[in-house]
Structure formats: C-alpha cells, structure tokens
Image (tube, rainbow, N blue to C red):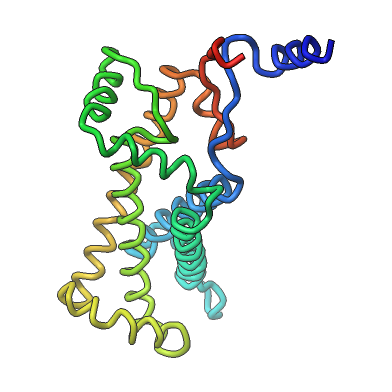
Length: 239
C-alpha cells in the first residue's frame, strides 16, 4: 500500500517521463543572479563614466553630482562583483555540496569523444548525456568567462587605486602595482578593462540564447538555475 502511494506521489510530482535531479546549491544560484544583476549595472554605469550621455540641467548651486553618483554605484557594484567572484571560487574548490556536479563535469572534458558528441548534439546529430552539470564546451566557456571576470575585477581595482589613494585604494595600489606595470601602465589597464567588458557583453546574449536552446533540446534543464533541480528522462530500470 505504501509503495503504491509513493508511486502515485511520484507520478503527480515528476510524471512518468522525467525524474527530478538536484544539481545547483542555493549558494550557486544566489551567486549567479547577484552577479548577473551587478554586471548589468556595471555595464550601464561604465558606459556613462566613459562618455556621459545624461546631463542634468545646469544650476548655480553645486547639488547635482550626477557623475559622482554613477561612479558611486559603479564602485559599489564592483566591490560586490569582487566579493561574489571570490565566493564563487571558494564554492568551486572548497564546498563539497556545491562543487559535486561541477567537478563531475570535468570527467567529460577529459575525453575527446565527449567534445565530439556535444558538438554533434548541437548539430542535432546525437544526444549527449552529461555526467555532471556542464558539457565540455560549456565547461570551457564558463572557465573563460570566470577568468575574464577575474581580470575585470583586477583591472577595476587598479583603476580604483588611482582615484582613491587611502584605505582600500592604497592597499590595491600596493598589491596590484606590479600587475599594472606588467600590463604596460594605467592607459593599457583602462583599455584591457574596456575590452573585457565587451567580451562579457558579447557573452550575455549568446549565453541566454543557448540556455533556451538547450532547454528546448533537453526539456527541464532551465529549471536548475531557479530551483537547483533539473529533470532528466525517466529510467524505468531505476524503479
């Protein structure tokens, strides 16, 4: 009787076609959405600081510090991005619950056949059952994105140190001074910061498109970033 009730509940919750599988921890999901939000704010405020496109009406009193306001929010979001990036790296290396399925994805990346099968999957020539959360191409793209974000954070810290010379600005200046020298000076740091911003901008629409494409190809996969669960075709042998 209990077994029959259990099967009925399973059918109501997950259906006979799909099984729920837990993949992303709450920490990973929150980090993803906070990082997405601050990146959009950083892009908008960054464009404004590079070339102000909104100018308030002129007044005699010094009360409309609009550029300072945009700079303030750019710096606030920059520090949030720095903290979230550090936290995300920590989760990947040191939090067993969060890293479990990301590390499992590395098993596929080690085999050339997995790369070929995922490419064929994108061409609708094959199915690609992943061991972890990402396929090898996803792994490579997310790794490159993480390195770009880290570079963006480091170059942003160097730029910050040339505006604020005390406290955290002084600390960044001392720590990242050699890195600034290796990049060829402040002007090159600013150019690198700008170029990496465009790399992120280009990545965003591709990422969004591929998320929906993958959800259409493998129904149930888009749920993972909201609930932490993904859905896979039901395997009767596991009953």
